[in-house]
Image (cartoon, rainbow, N blue to C red; front, side):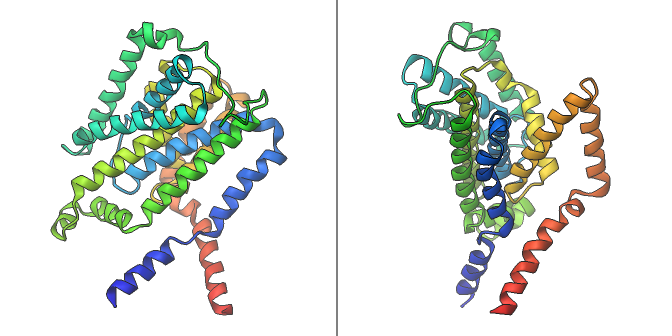
Length: 330
């Protein structure tokens, strides 16, 4: 009987919420409604996927990382090198980039297991800095500081070419974002995801009840690395260019800022944060080109003082009320 109650609770938690349907509907509708904004929408989709991958380890497993860009950058370079020297079909390059980033994530997950949060911060940052320096010094392979260019992508699955306006590129990125988010959502709202929450809340108590914390952290860190590799590959494939900038520290800082804006622990914070951060950055860079970072910093202060939960409380309230009204009608 307790097992049945637990299964019922997991099923309730994993149900698709109204705001999720609204987000995906608007993302698809943008293809028709905003045909001239495909490039910025593509940028949002790539950043959202990167943020969702970090939220999987930060929001659920409690692993703070300053070097998540290592997986992003590796995926970007693998996709570019594969398209230039071997096979230019985007999906094949995407899968290979994700696999390479996943291998790096698995190899470095054992370092993340050691030490405290501060040690993890420095370790992950060190890995990203090392890869960035390698990309800069290995000019014969990566193009060095000038970047890797001179390659073009074949049609997606041999059917859909990357057009000048970016429409097919956005649809491609949106499809990868949706698939990856649904996989991450399935992980997050499964017993595996609940065990990650237990590890994040109290690692010692989780170990006492038999939760294999080390194994679960390795698995989720590897999965998050694969998704980050996907996002890096998408950036390379939609721009036909990759440079050491994909391994720069500011990308890790930006994705953390995205999660601060959107919130952690429910995956869609990465998507909402990516929308807000990208639109706000583009608008402020036009209105105040020299001081746009000041206003971003001011927004962070407001979020800290007011509390992001208060600002986002309406979103949690609305689905709950709708759910109550449904149950009362039935």
